Length: 300
Image 1 (cartoon, one colour):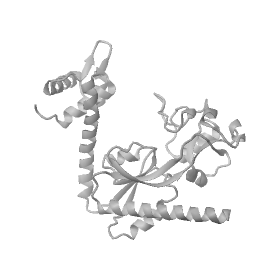
Image 2: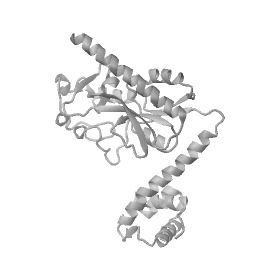
Image 3: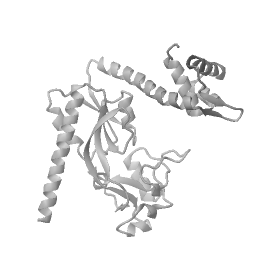
Image 4: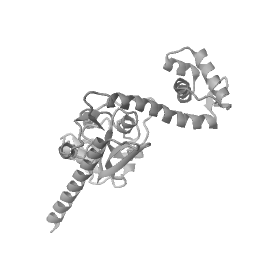
């Protein structure tokens, strides 16, 4: 059996994700007949049926589901290898840090200061992205390390927790629920998150099909919150740094805490990555110790 080519895997993944040969061909920018031939060639090479085809639908078989999972991993590895090789060959390599703006627990400036004193440090470069995009940026080789909010898809990544904090719901100050001091998720029925998902399903609810997130940054999100269009789940550190007269932050009793973590590729051997992780863990430890001391002094 001959090994599958990257091109074949890309074609297969397109069909497997679209479950429609016409749409997959459009996505790949090619005609449908050669795409169909390639899929048949793959099935002959592997001696398995990957798709159940009828006149009404295309469906993955069990073998197809297995190949889809592993093909995605293989394509991610190929993409990441190219990006990392290009970055390693740069005349001025940097440590690329993926994060969502303002989602750093207020720790990033101190982490960068501590990191800069390490002999292994490279000049840092911030790679800003949308909510949840950071783990994939690391897997794709577009970033070397990332700050993320758990729970998160951490396939292929190692990580260290930095800071755990409560999550509040941000809503319009004119919302009737803002008059209450304590809420539960069920109270949020009928309200939507920025991705269109029902707020009462919690922060990890998948987006509704066909709904486009109407805001790409916190400023836009909070502007929509003020109008009553959406609600938003915000870690306490984000709420503290974004006081707005038109936004009310309220605790939600059955909303789990979130954890800020630093993540990096499992096979990373970069001294600069190790230096950043050391700095992040040390700064988080100091911040936790300071918070504990402050709390005890207030209760003494």
